[in-house]
Image 1 (cartoon, rainbow, N blue to C red):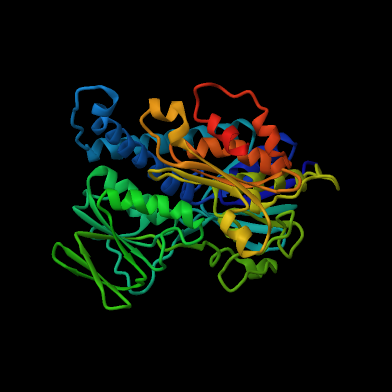
Image 2 (image 1 turned 120 degrees about the vertical axis):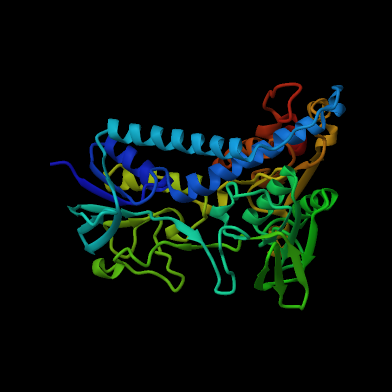
Length: 454
Protein backbone atom coordinates (compact mmCIF):
# COMPACT_ATOMS: atom_id res chain seq x y z
CA UNK A 1 0.00 0.00 0.00
CA UNK A 2 1.34 3.44 -0.94
CA UNK A 3 2.28 5.85 1.83
CA UNK A 4 -0.42 8.47 2.34
CA UNK A 5 0.82 12.07 2.51
CA UNK A 6 -1.66 14.84 3.28
CA UNK A 7 -0.66 18.47 2.77
CA UNK A 8 -2.47 21.55 4.07
CA UNK A 9 -1.41 24.54 1.99
CA UNK A 10 -0.57 24.58 -1.71
CA UNK A 11 2.14 27.23 -1.84
CA UNK A 12 5.72 26.66 -3.01
CA UNK A 13 6.42 24.22 -0.15
CA UNK A 14 3.14 22.31 -0.42
CA UNK A 15 2.91 21.93 -4.18
CA UNK A 16 6.61 21.05 -4.52
CA UNK A 17 6.30 18.40 -1.81
CA UNK A 18 3.13 17.06 -3.44
CA UNK A 19 4.71 16.80 -6.89
CA UNK A 20 7.96 15.24 -5.68
CA UNK A 21 6.28 12.79 -3.31
CA UNK A 22 3.87 11.68 -6.05
CA UNK A 23 6.83 11.00 -8.36
CA UNK A 24 8.38 8.91 -5.59
CA UNK A 25 5.21 6.80 -5.28
CA UNK A 26 3.20 8.41 -2.49
CA UNK A 27 -0.57 8.76 -2.45
CA UNK A 28 -0.91 12.53 -2.05
CA UNK A 29 -3.83 14.74 -1.02
CA UNK A 30 -3.34 18.52 -1.16
CA UNK A 31 -5.78 20.85 0.61
CA UNK A 32 -5.73 24.51 -0.45
CA UNK A 33 -8.22 27.18 0.57
CA UNK A 34 -7.30 29.93 -1.87
CA UNK A 35 -4.95 29.40 -4.80
CA UNK A 36 -2.69 26.54 -5.91
CA UNK A 37 0.74 28.11 -5.96
CA UNK A 38 0.29 29.96 -2.69
CA UNK A 39 -1.29 33.27 -1.70
CA UNK A 40 2.03 34.81 -0.64
CA UNK A 41 3.57 33.75 -3.95
CA UNK A 42 0.77 34.50 -6.41
CA UNK A 43 -0.85 37.39 -4.52
CA UNK A 44 2.35 39.07 -3.30
CA UNK A 45 5.56 38.07 -5.04
CA UNK A 46 4.42 37.65 -8.65
CA UNK A 47 2.18 40.78 -8.83
CA UNK A 48 4.82 42.99 -7.21
CA UNK A 49 7.50 41.84 -9.65
CA UNK A 50 5.09 42.32 -12.58
CA UNK A 51 4.45 45.91 -11.48
CA UNK A 52 8.16 46.51 -11.00
CA UNK A 53 8.77 45.18 -14.53
CA UNK A 54 6.19 47.65 -15.88
CA UNK A 55 7.87 50.49 -14.02
CA UNK A 56 11.21 49.32 -15.37
CA UNK A 57 9.87 49.37 -18.92
CA UNK A 58 8.69 52.95 -18.39
CA UNK A 59 12.16 53.79 -17.11
CA UNK A 60 13.80 52.37 -20.23
CA UNK A 61 11.50 54.44 -22.42
CA UNK A 62 12.20 57.65 -20.52
CA UNK A 63 15.95 56.97 -20.75
CA UNK A 64 15.81 56.27 -24.48
CA UNK A 65 17.72 59.45 -25.29
CA UNK A 66 20.76 58.03 -23.43
CA UNK A 67 20.73 55.11 -25.86
CA UNK A 68 20.79 57.30 -28.94
CA UNK A 69 17.03 57.29 -29.54
CA UNK A 70 14.53 60.08 -29.94
CA UNK A 71 12.84 60.43 -26.53
CA UNK A 72 9.25 59.24 -26.20
CA UNK A 73 6.70 59.28 -23.39
CA UNK A 74 4.95 56.33 -21.74
CA UNK A 75 1.63 56.53 -19.91
CA UNK A 76 0.44 53.95 -17.40
CA UNK A 77 -2.74 52.01 -18.23
CA UNK A 78 -3.79 50.74 -14.79
CA UNK A 79 -6.56 48.50 -16.16
CA UNK A 80 -4.18 46.87 -18.66
CA UNK A 81 -1.64 46.34 -15.87
CA UNK A 82 -4.30 44.75 -13.68
CA UNK A 83 -5.28 42.43 -16.54
CA UNK A 84 -1.64 41.50 -17.17
CA UNK A 85 -1.12 40.58 -13.52
CA UNK A 86 -4.32 38.49 -13.49
CA UNK A 87 -3.25 36.66 -16.66
CA UNK A 88 0.16 35.82 -15.18
CA UNK A 89 -1.39 34.55 -11.94
CA UNK A 90 -3.97 32.44 -13.79
CA UNK A 91 -1.35 30.89 -16.04
CA UNK A 92 0.98 29.99 -13.19
CA UNK A 93 -1.80 28.52 -11.08
CA UNK A 94 -3.17 26.60 -14.06
CA UNK A 95 0.23 25.14 -14.92
CA UNK A 96 0.79 24.01 -11.33
CA UNK A 97 -2.69 22.54 -11.02
CA UNK A 98 -2.36 20.59 -14.29
CA UNK A 99 1.03 19.20 -13.28
CA UNK A 100 -0.27 17.96 -9.93
CA UNK A 101 -3.40 16.43 -11.47
CA UNK A 102 -1.30 14.66 -14.10
CA UNK A 103 0.72 13.09 -11.28
CA UNK A 104 -2.38 11.80 -9.53
CA UNK A 105 -2.35 14.29 -6.67
CA UNK A 106 -5.83 14.69 -5.18
CA UNK A 107 -6.70 18.38 -4.87
CA UNK A 108 -9.26 19.51 -2.30
CA UNK A 109 -10.50 23.11 -2.29
CA UNK A 110 -11.14 24.16 1.27
CA UNK A 111 -9.73 25.09 4.65
CA UNK A 112 -7.68 22.27 6.15
CA UNK A 113 -7.58 21.51 9.85
CA UNK A 114 -5.96 18.76 11.93
CA UNK A 115 -8.31 16.61 14.00
CA UNK A 116 -5.69 14.22 15.33
CA UNK A 117 -2.10 13.03 14.81
CA UNK A 118 -3.07 11.15 11.62
CA UNK A 119 -6.31 12.86 10.59
CA UNK A 120 -7.53 16.12 9.12
CA UNK A 121 -10.62 17.64 7.58
CA UNK A 122 -11.07 19.96 4.63
CA UNK A 123 -14.08 22.25 4.82
CA UNK A 124 -15.27 23.85 1.59
CA UNK A 125 -16.82 27.31 1.28
CA UNK A 126 -20.32 25.81 1.07
CA UNK A 127 -19.85 23.84 4.30
CA UNK A 128 -19.07 20.39 2.91
CA UNK A 129 -16.48 18.44 4.92
CA UNK A 130 -13.96 15.90 3.64
CA UNK A 131 -12.20 13.66 6.16
CA UNK A 132 -8.69 12.40 5.44
CA UNK A 133 -6.42 9.90 7.15
CA UNK A 134 -2.67 10.09 6.50
CA UNK A 135 0.61 8.41 7.41
CA UNK A 136 2.44 11.74 7.18
CA UNK A 137 1.21 15.34 7.15
CA UNK A 138 2.78 18.57 5.91
CA UNK A 139 1.59 21.95 7.19
CA UNK A 140 2.44 24.79 4.80
CA UNK A 141 -0.29 27.39 5.18
CA UNK A 142 1.92 30.45 4.66
CA UNK A 143 1.38 33.88 6.15
CA UNK A 144 -0.61 37.08 5.77
CA UNK A 145 0.26 40.79 6.14
CA UNK A 146 0.50 42.03 9.70
CA UNK A 147 -2.08 44.75 10.39
CA UNK A 148 -1.75 46.62 13.72
CA UNK A 149 -4.78 47.93 15.58
CA UNK A 150 -3.91 51.55 14.79
CA UNK A 151 -4.11 51.03 11.01
CA UNK A 152 -7.64 51.54 9.59
CA UNK A 153 -7.21 49.43 6.44
CA UNK A 154 -10.01 50.24 3.98
CA UNK A 155 -8.60 49.09 0.63
CA UNK A 156 -9.08 52.58 -0.78
CA UNK A 157 -6.89 55.11 1.01
CA UNK A 158 -5.13 52.88 3.54
CA UNK A 159 -3.80 49.72 1.95
CA UNK A 160 -2.30 46.43 2.99
CA UNK A 161 0.27 44.96 0.62
CA UNK A 162 -2.29 42.64 -0.99
CA UNK A 163 -4.54 45.57 -1.87
CA UNK A 164 -1.84 47.29 -3.88
CA UNK A 165 -1.28 44.98 -6.88
CA UNK A 166 -2.35 47.44 -8.22
CA UNK A 167 -4.59 49.62 -6.03
CA UNK A 168 -7.94 50.96 -7.28
CA UNK A 169 -6.18 54.12 -8.46
CA UNK A 170 -2.56 55.20 -8.72
CA UNK A 171 -1.70 57.21 -5.59
CA UNK A 172 -0.70 60.81 -6.14
CA UNK A 173 1.40 60.67 -2.98
CA UNK A 174 1.94 57.35 -1.21
CA UNK A 175 3.22 57.07 2.35
CA UNK A 176 4.90 53.69 2.82
CA UNK A 177 5.23 52.39 6.36
CA UNK A 178 8.07 49.87 6.67
CA UNK A 179 11.56 50.05 5.19
CA UNK A 180 12.36 46.35 4.94
CA UNK A 181 12.51 44.40 1.69
CA UNK A 182 8.78 44.66 0.94
CA UNK A 183 8.60 48.33 1.85
CA UNK A 184 11.48 49.48 -0.36
CA UNK A 185 10.15 47.44 -3.28
CA UNK A 186 6.84 49.31 -2.97
CA UNK A 187 8.68 52.63 -2.82
CA UNK A 188 10.57 51.79 -5.99
CA UNK A 189 7.48 50.38 -7.68
CA UNK A 190 5.22 53.39 -7.17
CA UNK A 191 7.89 56.02 -7.72
CA UNK A 192 8.67 54.29 -11.04
CA UNK A 193 5.00 54.44 -12.00
CA UNK A 194 4.79 58.17 -11.28
CA UNK A 195 3.70 58.53 -7.65
CA UNK A 196 5.34 60.84 -5.15
CA UNK A 197 6.49 58.64 -2.24
CA UNK A 198 7.39 59.17 1.42
CA UNK A 199 9.02 56.29 3.28
CA UNK A 200 8.86 56.04 7.07
CA UNK A 201 12.11 54.44 8.27
CA UNK A 202 12.04 53.30 11.90
CA UNK A 203 15.85 52.97 12.05
CA UNK A 204 18.63 55.17 10.66
CA UNK A 205 18.92 53.28 7.37
CA UNK A 206 16.58 51.51 5.00
CA UNK A 207 16.99 47.71 4.93
CA UNK A 208 18.26 47.59 8.53
CA UNK A 209 19.26 43.93 8.21
CA UNK A 210 21.46 44.52 5.16
CA UNK A 211 25.06 45.62 4.65
CA UNK A 212 25.20 49.42 5.33
CA UNK A 213 27.05 50.01 2.05
CA UNK A 214 24.31 48.20 0.15
CA UNK A 215 21.58 50.15 1.96
CA UNK A 216 23.39 53.43 1.27
CA UNK A 217 23.44 52.71 -2.47
CA UNK A 218 19.67 52.25 -2.44
CA UNK A 219 19.06 55.35 -0.31
CA UNK A 220 21.10 57.44 -2.75
CA UNK A 221 18.92 56.32 -5.65
CA UNK A 222 15.68 56.85 -3.73
CA UNK A 223 16.69 60.40 -2.87
CA UNK A 224 17.66 61.02 -6.49
CA UNK A 225 14.14 59.97 -7.48
CA UNK A 226 12.63 62.49 -5.06
CA UNK A 227 11.57 60.00 -2.39
CA UNK A 228 11.27 61.60 1.05
CA UNK A 229 12.83 59.54 3.86
CA UNK A 230 11.60 60.01 7.44
CA UNK A 231 14.35 58.31 9.45
CA UNK A 232 14.13 57.33 13.09
CA UNK A 233 10.34 57.52 13.00
CA UNK A 234 7.93 54.78 14.00
CA UNK A 235 4.32 55.03 12.79
CA UNK A 236 1.68 54.79 15.50
CA UNK A 237 -1.53 56.10 13.95
CA UNK A 238 -3.27 56.88 10.67
CA UNK A 239 -5.96 59.51 10.12
CA UNK A 240 -8.08 59.81 6.97
CA UNK A 241 -9.87 63.07 6.16
CA UNK A 242 -11.36 63.10 2.68
CA UNK A 243 -8.53 62.79 0.17
CA UNK A 244 -5.79 63.30 2.76
CA UNK A 245 -4.12 60.52 4.74
CA UNK A 246 -1.91 61.48 7.70
CA UNK A 247 0.48 59.03 9.32
CA UNK A 248 1.42 60.00 12.87
CA UNK A 249 4.84 58.98 14.18
CA UNK A 250 6.03 58.45 17.74
CA UNK A 251 8.37 61.46 17.60
CA UNK A 252 5.58 63.89 16.72
CA UNK A 253 6.28 64.06 12.99
CA UNK A 254 3.42 63.54 10.55
CA UNK A 255 3.70 62.24 7.00
CA UNK A 256 0.87 63.35 4.76
CA UNK A 257 -0.19 61.93 1.41
CA UNK A 258 -3.14 60.75 -0.65
CA UNK A 259 -2.67 57.09 0.37
CA UNK A 260 -0.81 55.03 2.95
CA UNK A 261 0.50 51.48 2.60
CA UNK A 262 1.58 49.13 5.38
CA UNK A 263 4.55 46.84 4.80
CA UNK A 264 5.52 45.89 8.35
CA UNK A 265 5.87 42.15 8.24
CA UNK A 266 3.60 39.13 8.29
CA UNK A 267 1.89 36.67 10.60
CA UNK A 268 1.77 32.87 10.19
CA UNK A 269 -1.55 31.26 9.29
CA UNK A 270 -1.57 28.84 12.20
CA UNK A 271 -4.46 29.81 14.48
CA UNK A 272 -7.09 27.66 12.72
CA UNK A 273 -4.93 24.64 11.92
CA UNK A 274 -5.98 22.48 14.87
CA UNK A 275 -2.42 22.13 16.09
CA UNK A 276 -3.54 21.19 19.60
CA UNK A 277 -5.62 18.27 18.33
CA UNK A 278 -2.48 16.69 16.86
CA UNK A 279 -0.13 17.74 19.66
CA UNK A 280 1.90 20.03 17.39
CA UNK A 281 3.76 22.76 19.25
CA UNK A 282 3.94 26.39 18.17
CA UNK A 283 5.92 29.32 19.55
CA UNK A 284 4.71 32.63 20.96
CA UNK A 285 4.57 34.14 17.47
CA UNK A 286 2.39 31.36 16.09
CA UNK A 287 5.19 29.76 14.08
CA UNK A 288 5.70 25.99 14.11
CA UNK A 289 9.30 25.09 15.06
CA UNK A 290 11.00 22.41 12.96
CA UNK A 291 14.18 20.34 13.07
CA UNK A 292 16.79 19.91 10.33
CA UNK A 293 14.41 17.58 8.45
CA UNK A 294 11.48 20.05 8.77
CA UNK A 295 9.74 17.80 11.31
CA UNK A 296 7.67 19.32 14.08
CA UNK A 297 7.70 17.90 17.61
CA UNK A 298 5.39 15.19 16.22
CA UNK A 299 7.82 13.18 14.02
CA UNK A 300 5.44 12.35 11.15
CA UNK A 301 4.06 15.90 10.94
CA UNK A 302 6.17 18.41 9.03
CA UNK A 303 6.01 22.19 8.59
CA UNK A 304 7.50 24.35 5.86
CA UNK A 305 7.42 27.77 4.23
CA UNK A 306 6.48 30.90 6.16
CA UNK A 307 4.72 28.81 8.80
CA UNK A 308 8.04 27.28 9.87
CA UNK A 309 9.53 30.64 10.83
CA UNK A 310 12.55 30.18 8.60
CA UNK A 311 13.50 32.55 5.78
CA UNK A 312 10.24 33.70 4.12
CA UNK A 313 11.44 33.01 0.58
CA UNK A 314 9.67 30.97 -2.09
CA UNK A 315 12.97 29.33 -3.00
CA UNK A 316 13.49 28.19 0.59
CA UNK A 317 9.92 26.88 0.84
CA UNK A 318 10.29 24.92 -2.40
CA UNK A 319 13.54 23.34 -1.23
CA UNK A 320 11.94 22.45 2.10
CA UNK A 321 9.06 20.80 0.23
CA UNK A 322 11.43 18.70 -1.85
CA UNK A 323 13.42 17.61 1.20
CA UNK A 324 10.24 16.73 3.09
CA UNK A 325 9.00 14.55 0.24
CA UNK A 326 12.31 12.69 0.19
CA UNK A 327 12.32 12.30 3.97
CA UNK A 328 8.75 11.02 4.06
CA UNK A 329 9.52 8.46 1.35
CA UNK A 330 12.75 7.31 2.98
CA UNK A 331 15.00 8.79 0.28
CA UNK A 332 17.47 10.28 2.70
CA UNK A 333 20.60 9.17 4.45
CA UNK A 334 23.40 10.15 6.74
CA UNK A 335 25.36 11.84 3.94
CA UNK A 336 22.53 14.13 2.83
CA UNK A 337 23.35 17.82 3.08
CA UNK A 338 21.15 19.66 5.56
CA UNK A 339 19.45 22.87 4.51
CA UNK A 340 21.68 25.77 5.50
CA UNK A 341 19.39 28.80 5.66
CA UNK A 342 22.40 31.10 6.09
CA UNK A 343 23.43 30.24 2.52
CA UNK A 344 20.14 31.12 0.85
CA UNK A 345 20.42 33.78 -1.84
CA UNK A 346 17.89 36.61 -1.81
CA UNK A 347 17.15 39.61 -4.00
CA UNK A 348 15.39 42.96 -3.72
CA UNK A 349 13.90 44.14 -6.99
CA UNK A 350 14.54 47.84 -6.72
CA UNK A 351 16.75 50.12 -8.82
CA UNK A 352 19.50 49.43 -8.18
CA UNK A 353 18.62 45.76 -7.83
CA UNK A 354 20.16 44.20 -4.73
CA UNK A 355 21.10 40.58 -4.08
CA UNK A 356 23.22 38.84 -1.51
CA UNK A 357 24.14 35.43 -0.17
CA UNK A 358 26.10 34.03 2.74
CA UNK A 359 28.26 36.05 5.13
CA UNK A 360 27.99 39.84 4.90
CA UNK A 361 31.03 42.05 5.41
CA UNK A 362 29.45 44.01 8.26
CA UNK A 363 28.41 40.82 10.09
CA UNK A 364 31.91 39.37 9.75
CA UNK A 365 33.51 42.44 11.26
CA UNK A 366 30.87 42.64 14.01
CA UNK A 367 31.75 39.07 14.97
CA UNK A 368 35.48 39.82 14.91
CA UNK A 369 36.03 37.40 12.04
CA UNK A 370 38.90 38.00 9.66
CA UNK A 371 37.78 38.03 6.05
CA UNK A 372 39.03 39.21 2.68
CA UNK A 373 36.68 41.65 0.97
CA UNK A 374 37.05 42.58 -2.69
CA UNK A 375 34.81 45.01 -4.55
CA UNK A 376 34.56 46.03 -8.20
CA UNK A 377 32.18 48.71 -9.54
CA UNK A 378 30.02 48.09 -12.60
CA UNK A 379 31.45 51.30 -14.04
CA UNK A 380 34.49 49.15 -14.94
CA UNK A 381 32.31 46.80 -17.03
CA UNK A 382 32.07 47.34 -20.81
CA UNK A 383 28.68 45.60 -20.84
CA UNK A 384 27.32 47.91 -18.12
CA UNK A 385 28.47 50.93 -20.09
CA UNK A 386 26.91 49.57 -23.28
CA UNK A 387 23.57 49.10 -21.52
CA UNK A 388 23.85 52.47 -19.76
CA UNK A 389 23.54 50.79 -16.35
CA UNK A 390 26.93 51.38 -14.77
CA UNK A 391 25.83 52.08 -11.19
CA UNK A 392 26.46 49.53 -8.46
CA UNK A 393 29.12 47.02 -7.58
CA UNK A 394 29.99 43.40 -6.83
CA UNK A 395 31.46 42.53 -3.44
CA UNK A 396 32.86 39.12 -2.56
CA UNK A 397 33.72 37.99 0.99
CA UNK A 398 36.20 35.12 1.30
CA UNK A 399 38.43 33.38 3.82
CA UNK A 400 41.89 35.01 3.66
CA UNK A 401 43.67 31.73 4.39
CA UNK A 402 41.81 29.24 2.20
CA UNK A 403 40.26 31.48 -0.43
CA UNK A 404 36.87 29.84 0.13
CA UNK A 405 33.97 32.10 -0.84
CA UNK A 406 31.91 32.94 2.25
CA UNK A 407 29.41 35.40 0.81
CA UNK A 408 28.83 38.30 -1.48
CA UNK A 409 26.60 41.15 -2.55
CA UNK A 410 25.61 42.47 -5.95
CA UNK A 411 24.13 45.94 -6.35
CA UNK A 412 23.08 46.80 -9.89
CA UNK A 413 21.28 45.57 -12.98
CA UNK A 414 20.44 41.82 -13.00
CA UNK A 415 21.80 41.40 -9.45
CA UNK A 416 19.32 38.59 -8.76
CA UNK A 417 20.73 36.60 -11.67
CA UNK A 418 24.40 37.38 -11.07
CA UNK A 419 24.34 36.42 -7.39
CA UNK A 420 23.60 32.83 -8.42
CA UNK A 421 27.28 32.35 -9.29
CA UNK A 422 28.31 33.45 -5.80
CA UNK A 423 25.53 31.29 -4.28
CA UNK A 424 26.85 28.17 -6.02
CA UNK A 425 30.33 28.99 -4.73
CA UNK A 426 29.11 29.54 -1.15
CA UNK A 427 26.97 26.39 -1.11
CA UNK A 428 29.71 24.16 -2.49
CA UNK A 429 32.71 25.63 -0.70
CA UNK A 430 34.38 26.86 -3.89
CA UNK A 431 37.38 29.18 -3.81
CA UNK A 432 37.71 32.62 -5.35
CA UNK A 433 40.20 31.03 -7.75
CA UNK A 434 37.41 28.81 -9.10
CA UNK A 435 35.50 31.93 -10.15
CA UNK A 436 38.57 33.73 -11.49
CA UNK A 437 39.57 30.74 -13.63
CA UNK A 438 36.12 30.32 -15.17
CA UNK A 439 35.99 31.40 -18.82
CA UNK A 440 33.05 33.81 -18.81
CA UNK A 441 31.33 35.55 -21.69
CA UNK A 442 32.72 38.87 -22.96
CA UNK A 443 31.23 41.40 -22.87
CA UNK A 444 28.93 40.46 -20.00
CA UNK A 445 28.09 41.72 -16.55
CA UNK A 446 29.29 38.40 -15.11
CA UNK A 447 32.88 39.41 -15.87
CA UNK A 448 32.70 41.70 -12.86
CA UNK A 449 32.27 38.61 -10.67
CA UNK A 450 35.63 37.25 -11.80
CA UNK A 451 37.26 40.65 -11.32
CA UNK A 452 35.86 40.90 -7.78
CA UNK A 453 37.21 37.44 -7.01
CA UNK A 454 40.79 38.40 -8.01
